[in-house]
Image (cartoon, rainbow, N blue to C red; front, top):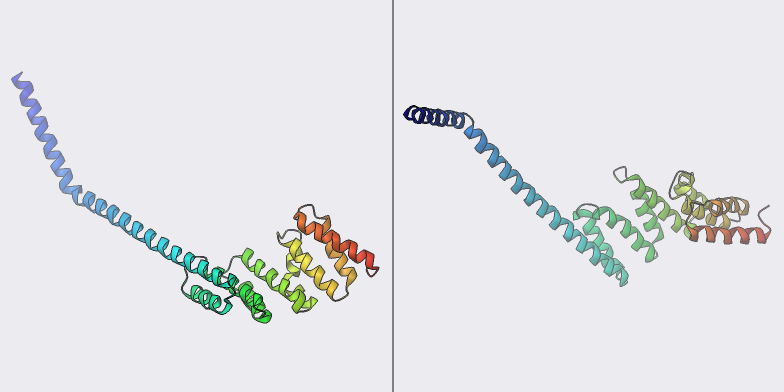
Length: 221
């Protein structure tokens, strides 16, 4: 029994010596890793709080600009949107650019609105889907405030079968063609929309109405 006790004591001392050796060798690394984890966690929490705060503020500023626009305070809305475009966070500067162009159109500054949408459409840093939407928005303004060529310049490329905005682009082109008495061109475009099963129902209904109107006018030959 004494021998067993002695052996256990020796083994315990060996384990303690090994543990001390391991700690002396790797202890600073363990402490450094723990400190790094704590610092990284603190930095992430601080960054998340900062970005959330920035995003929340930009969201509040954008909502305030929308309220000003809805209340008919166009100039104040444009000033608020310009500030957001400059200092906003995340997607809000881009939203501010698009909304500014809309406000300009609502107040009757059609050339300014088209210029705003054209600027977004020409910006390579903007996602393609948003650039295409800006082209379409400019074209819709130009139906009544420009020529067929002006409309075509913006949306003709969007009329391909693979583009999700093709229905609206074809409608815009069709209306611009009808406005310039290009009935045959307008009829073709509206028929494409009316016959496209993937087109929204409202778009197909409008297109069908225009097809009937153009055919009924007798000018589509």
